[in-house]
Length: 188
Image (cartoon, rainbow, N blue to C red; front, side):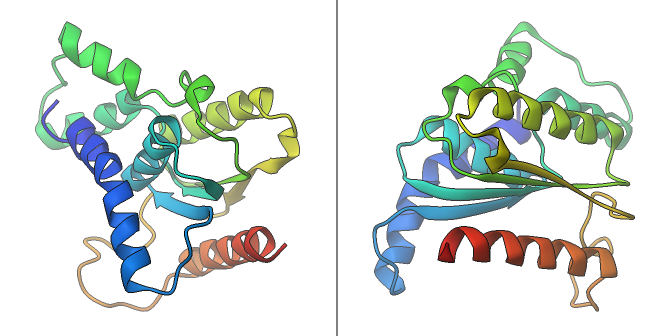
């Protein structure tokens, strides 16, 4: 209630203005865009897909936070106690369950989901559930892809990831997958 949901909602709410600012600064037209989000950033991308009318050409998600309940479950150890679910918190978690909200997608762009073989089991299950739910909703289910990267845990960089460091082989593999995906969908 005080971090995950507000951060995701605020970032999605600020997205249209941030996009306008980028278009003003860069030589970018007002056509459809592609979005990429990893971890909680993927929840932001999904929130944008379910709450805005911004034309989206393609989407890529890496080790995504698809269901708020799963992410909250991962923070229990950090907090030192289980999260205390209130009725309001349950409603917010329901609203941020993007598997349940696939019907709210404002568009159905090609979507790539990259899941690390060593990511948290609940996040991997959520990713699979999202792909299956999207494939049921899309006219062409083949435009929703799930790629698993062997050896990839949740973080793409060594933690805490605050200093420059050589790229991990797993992160390089993710880069290659994303480059192929976006090249195909941006130039095709």
